Image (tube, rainbow, N blue to C red; front, side, top):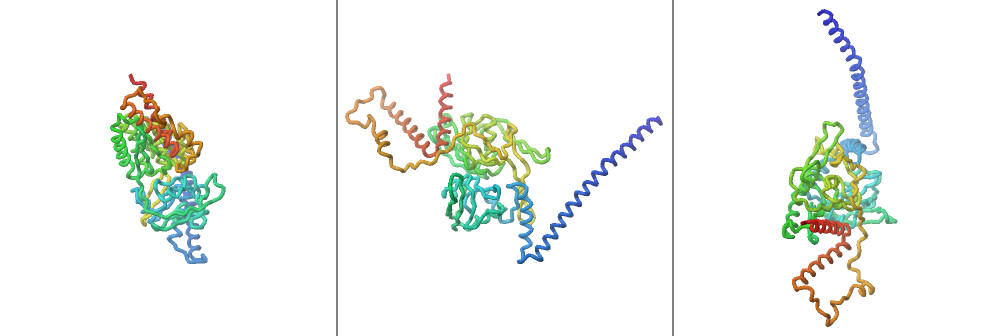
Length: 448
């Protein structure tokens, strides 16, 4: 019994000695780190006081501190930043879908301000601003060296006021100026239309109205075609959609999925990761879906695209997306401001991160240059398509069809002509509609 006690005691003493040997250096190392941090904070305080006392002009202490905070955050990545009270208030208004401005989503790339995408129907969209454009000057003042928030502030102003942007565009030899009038931006998150027997859902942003708008436009389009049985399929147009709320991206994805993971997020600590799964109920009842994307499709748009692509629920068509695969958390701070901090990366259901890579379409289709539909046809074009047998006098009648059959044929021809016109206006969308029609035709042919 004594031997056992002695062994246990020796074991305890050895454990205590080992703990002291391991924990002691760790505590010392942490203490050294803390000391170094406090020394750096003291250095910041010294510089701050020196600037306040000796800078050539009197300084605003609050602005100095805000600039220091923002500099710290923007040094992390292009999407982390400090938002002063006014900017934080503007952001909250934007997520509700109405705000004043130009209607462009921008980011910063190698010191330059780059357009992610213009929003539908806004001054930027109407002026021809394109995804990928670089804004080098605002009202003649260079944007080089400014932070993203500072550049955005330069572009803000009263509704109705004019602003001059200098644009550098790939494929254009020289920079050019674009004049815009600031307006109240009322973003309609989802717009629907029908093309033939296909319902097209144009999703321009992911704000608080998106899921509700999607459901309303879905219902309207289905009713217009006489019910879901008459619908060949759906096109979800996410081109130039800069993203928005993660919750809305998850909700929109869920609308078209029966089950499975939609997206996962992984932060610095493994225990902080989250997975979001679909709930039963595909609103289309399994109808074919084509998702349209391009270089202006970012963030939440890429979450939806990646989820539907990985589950083989949709064919993705267009060009490679923007490649923003990070999640920002907005943290309100004292003084009514807020911090936008990148806290996680998101991953598609297959486990891929699209950060800096983007989503690659299943079918790559470039958008050709816009054709001038108002241009008068040439003599050759008139000669080729101006007249047919039906235009000649005294022609023989077609005795192989009834009048009703002829009417149905004319309706079908009208749809085909509408599709042909769409190819001139929006080739990518026309391609998507053709795919839906083809899949629907094959499915009907395979029915017993």
